[in-house]
Length: 215
Image 1 (cartoon, rainbow, N blue to C red):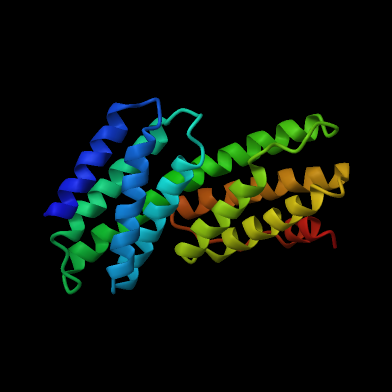
Image 2 (cartoon, rainbow, N blue to C red; image 1 turned 135 degrees about the horizontal axis):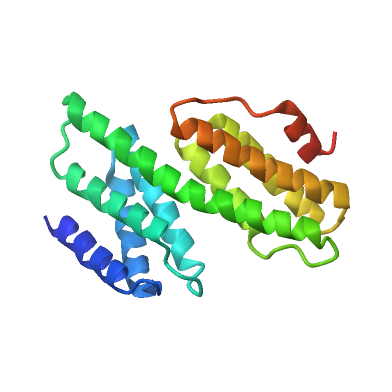
């Protein structure tokens, strides 16, 4: 009950401060999720807590931007998970289904935000390739790979991880064709996520991966 009350208090503070990001609340929520993960034995719940940690960490490291509507929805999914955990029965099929839905939505809310930002930032960079690489694109690709790994979405993980490595190379050796390959990689992540959102798990296009690897 105390854990639930702490989550509710800090989540309410976070939502009330929109569109600003309430860093003290975010920090407390991140720590609460880490505490829950460290004591969690059930694999599906460990996935949920890991997704929640990624969410609050991403908010904490980008305090200057606005707290969006999609992120508010993700915060509400965390609260739904906290409430469910207090009454969860691993042998109760409806409870297990509810957890799967919450984790699914929590993943998609985060992944959609990152995917849109990657496509936008990389497309803009491809139009002005002499400009500096957008500041957060490599971190966004790495974050996407981590999220996909949490939910065992291997195709998205493979593309995002390869994209992150390719962006690391582009920091030291910039080639216009490689920037266009980055855009295609971000678009491929978006395509795979859209398929996953409607229940289809697709393999990534090999030509996109090959371009990212520089084959």
